[in-house]
Structure formats: structure tokens, C-alpha cells
Image 1: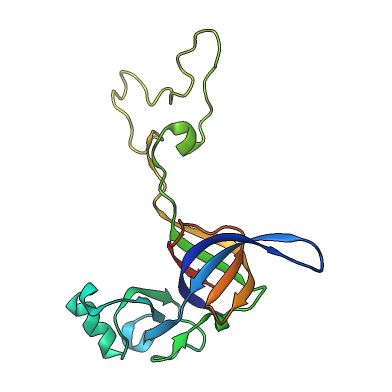
Image 2 (image 1 turned 30 degrees about the vertical axis):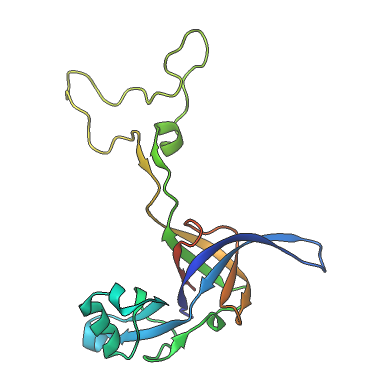
Length: 205
């Protein structure tokens, strides 16, 4: 069954099981409610997809085109609008997707913008090994050779070097829903998910 919802990562905590005495690390995601804006079909649009909106905002924070698109389907202004390709089971225009679509034990994958690390060297960024640390070595954390000399007299594109790290879209696979809090719109997912606190995430089942 295809499931999907949009949410915000609130942070991590631990859940204690009184029966087994075990402690499980979970990420708390405030997911939904997400109104179904549009259901795209292969006959009309050339592909199957479902558009979900998330996080209501003031009308002035959206462009006129965005407000018009949402108003066309009877949905108010929302900050996020995401398409789930392939469609979602039971999605109907005008209805709302909530965390009730998920159950404990469901396998999910979560996508988000990973935490930016800033400008980093090759050891942290690409997992390079460090140089010798004794006998006057000046090559402890340097990248080493980045190309040949006279031929080709340049550095090839794509060589792993220092630079900005993180801040890119990451999808974490193989996660499991530990618990669902319907009243507070919370999903508890075992383990960690990409992104900082309050980061926007997409949950797919």
C-alpha cells in the first residue's frame, strides 16, 4: 500500500517499554494534517500523482499563482506543496491525510534536507585517511596529490577535494514506525531521520 504524509521533525527522544525493560530511540515527527490538493491521473496529466499541502500560512506569504492553484481545489494557503508520484491509496481531492494512515510496525522512508556542515576538509567530507603523524610530517590532514604533472597539466573534474558538506536532500530507507499519536498528529519513527530540528520531511510508506 502506498502511503505518504508531510511533516516537521521535532527532535529525538527515548521510549521505555515497561514489559521488556527496553529503551528505544525514536524521532518525533509532527505529521499532517495534509489536505489533498489534486489527484493527477495518467489519462489527464500523463502520470499518476497526488499533491499534498502542509503548514497553513497567511495568504500574503504565497504568490498569486500559488494561491489560485490552491483555491481552485478549495484549499487555503499552505507553505508546502509536494507531489507523491504513483499516487496514494484512498486519496480523494478535498479530503485530508492524517497520521491515522500509518500503524506501528509500518516500514517507511523519510526524506529531508540534511544538516549543513559548512566547508570541510577531505578527511571529514570524503572519509580520507590522515597522513603520518610523526618524524616532522607536514601532511597530517592534507588531501595529497590531486592529479598528474605535465600530462594533462590540469586537475580533472570531479576530484574529491575540500568543500561544502551537507545541506542536500537525503532519503533514509528502512525505517520503522514505532508508535502513532493521532490526537497530537505525531509519528514516532525508530532511529534517526535526515535534517535538523524543525526541518521539513516527507514520509513515504
